[in-house]
Image (cartoon, rainbow, N blue to C red; front, top):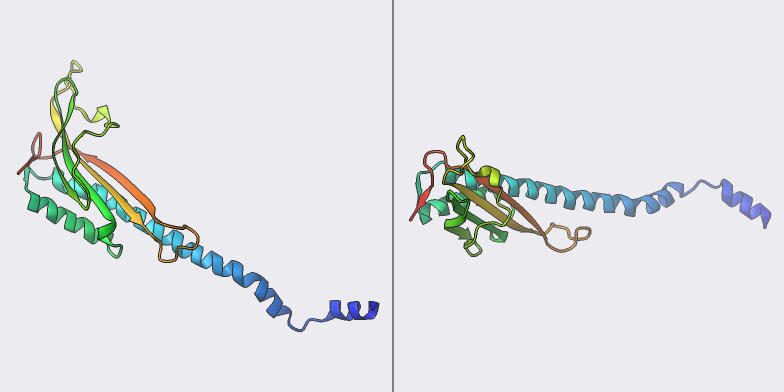
Length: 181
């Protein structure tokens, strides 16, 4: 019996196959995990670019119509490609503020969701312009928000859908407020 154990310990035939059988599942899991995580990071980067782009394009205008914001949403959907634009909920709004700092939604246009009716509760007061005495100068801000429901091509590690979100504020460049019809 001792002789058979000694012979078994010295044998090297099939060692590579055994090592591969032990390492292959770990390598496959790492590969699919890297694919899922890489896709999620790429999609999150695109979501951030959409928030910036939507706010920036609208903030460059003096006046926008619903068809203009539809064109902006089409540009946003092109940024999201190859990810499905039907999973993107995008809202662009004009948030105005008066001399007392009261926030109001002047207008809002949505894609795949409902429009914004109230100002965001976390609106940064640093965006409100002030005069030399510290009084608020009435103005506005373009507010873009996106929520994207991301599902990885292989859903073994990340599981079901993950909601990626981003918001972006932009000051109108050519007017105090961007008008809408």
